Length: 312
Image (cartoon, rainbow, N blue to C red; front, side):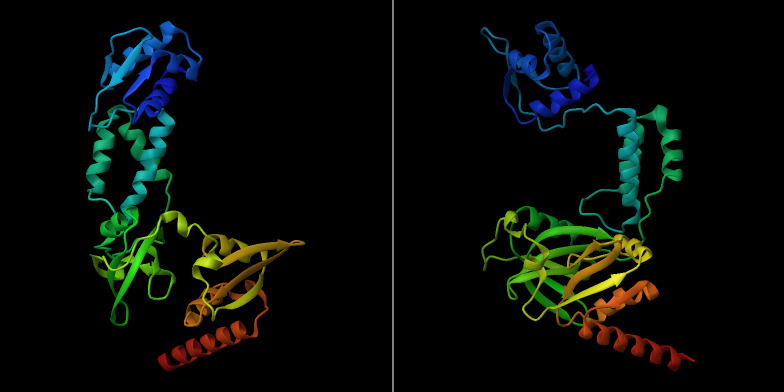
């Protein structure tokens, strides 16, 4: 690696350490003693609070410092970070207390010579995200409880306001919406909540939290209830594209001899959701190997047909 890449890696390597030896750098990066000494001086110039310790062997200490040490980025890395940061523009809320516009301006101030080119790149290279006006007021609290592996009580507004005792272990964004996946202590299983429907989050001391590693299990174990129904749906090659654009943890795509099958399950109470999902495939669905699912889809189509007839 070249010197700038090596210095950047050194900053990451020394992060969290309170001391190091010159030989540590020489062995890790296969460099000479004189090169290691020059790199240490360069690290000091970059802001790493290094001091020399008395004694033989080239020992150094690192002062505790709450400020983030500057990190070197290549031009390509800078452009990639800027474009990725622009995707935050599509979200009404983020889990961080920040002004997205001001964040972008601060980034541009660090690279004034590239500002015009950054703007053009972001305008041309678009990572489209569906924009929503829905605000997730409790998103930061949800993230903090999840990071601390701490259970919480949430108030969830759907058709009516309900109270749940949960532990969040995943937050994801899809189509401009934030979703939180949590262990529901009453059900004993995972549930997915739309974060914009969570009106309040409170600390819960009644149940013990679980390590995040305990949720690293297959979807069948996390989401499947005892009353769940399995299905296999054959789709066309075009339907495969639909699947990659949108699918859920309860589904997986299997290819056999050039044909494509969605294997999955749905729980009781999710009939309308699963029917709407497959209806949007249209005639890209070839077969439905589940009488129950076929009936669910037919019932939903009939309901929609009657709805539009009544509109006429």
